[in-house]
Length: 628
DNA sequence: GTAGGGTTAG
Image 1 (cartoon, chains in turn purple, green):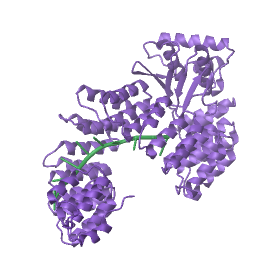
Image 2 (cartoon, protein in one colour; image 1 turned 180 degrees about the vertical axis):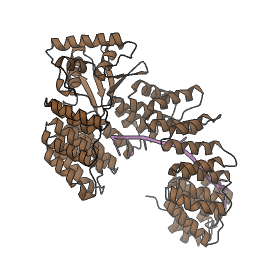
Image 3 (cartoon, rainbow, N blue to C red; image 1 turned 135 degrees about the horizontal axis):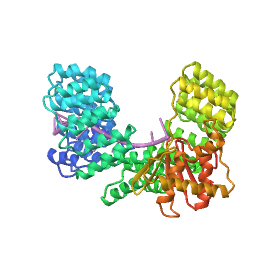
Image 4 (cartoon, rainbow, N blue to C red; image 1 turned 30 degrees about the vertical axis):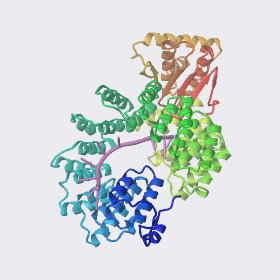
């Protein structure tokens, strides 16, 4: 920890600057030294020189010192300088308010604003820019009348900052009103308005405003691409990114972060790799954001090796980087590695966050590490002072339920109330899932009744119980569930699998005939069936919802979306090459078995990403160890 | 001597 030279300030200020401590320097020279300082050590040395030369009360030098301290993230030193300054002027106040805003300390900034007024220091438009920067909606609303009263609301910067406050705060109507009545629009104000729409999921309004801009800059593109990436429109994000490249606009680190996230969501490894090489070929520095985005993309696209490579070469990893890698390990079934990295984080003095625990608890759940998982869950509060949220409970209930401790899991669901957490349909869904796995109809019925009685049932509730009945050949139960689903207007989310071939993503739903190569695809499905038969494989008809004839049930399984995607992969890629599939739902038992066999017969490595995790099928075995 | 818009993890 570096100390501020304040201790020295009082002692050396009583020493005249002409005691032979080096050549005397003009304030101008010192000012330019401050501006050009590269790090905190240099700045501290210059600060010491300022004091040595007797300029400790020089307003411009102190102002510059204060700004530089803030720019190095040293609000403490900046504030120390401020408090040692007699009668700070509007520059000083504005800049210290700005420093607080940069550290998300807006209320403290407002306190300083009140203090400056009580000392009769008149704020100006710059002060309000600083106050409103990144300010939350409520305090921003309180500042708004002050802006109007002092006549700064027509200033371009102040008005844009106001638009931004309302926009980010989700009051889009007020934001739009302020925006529409601006004396003059600027690219910045437009971008701020678009950000408001994009951040709150209104991509239609964001896009229509975006399309009106003739001269877009990178920030503007980034906002729009990022909006698509964040709100479930990854394909649109990638399309818009391609358009950005076509317009010769140079993407930057922020663009790549957004578009890599989009690639990760749809599992577009080839596109992700292309972007990675673009980054390398264009000499773009891989900072911590970009590095983490690359790790996230590679893990979600099935290449743990590439993710690890980035992780190991990334300097200054933060907790988010660790979390991405831990979740990556967990998704791929590398539970020992996930645990080791979690410990490694401690060694590197990175405090785990709530999300670190979600990653590691999921890892334990997927590997059946019950006692380790329980220990980690308990340590959250005792050791790390992090209160578990409903998601953490979800992980532990999943951990216990999967491992067969259904009653323990059920008790925990009921005990969540102790922490004032009400179990939600997702928690009950997790429990129901475990009931299906362990064929515990009794508990499942109890839960479903509770959910229906409390109006908490969703499509998943019915489907899970329906699957459970089906697995027990209880067709009356299945029919009852089907009737209930119809009655409540519930529809099953259709299964959809995608595969990327030659930079293009091909999507399939069950029984899909839309693909131009359908004939060949179904031909391949038949061929696969032949292999399966010769290996003595009989289809796992349990998993089919409908009580239909066995023959039809067999047909229905043949055309599950992942089978179509795999068949397409087999006919359109080189023999021996890996096949990567992304599925929106969880892979079913039959598809899991079939894929294992396909990997054995073809000698191909097949990687399937389902809703929960990755399955790496190699030579007839799956990396999940059939525990998923 | 000062100001407004964009980034990562489940």
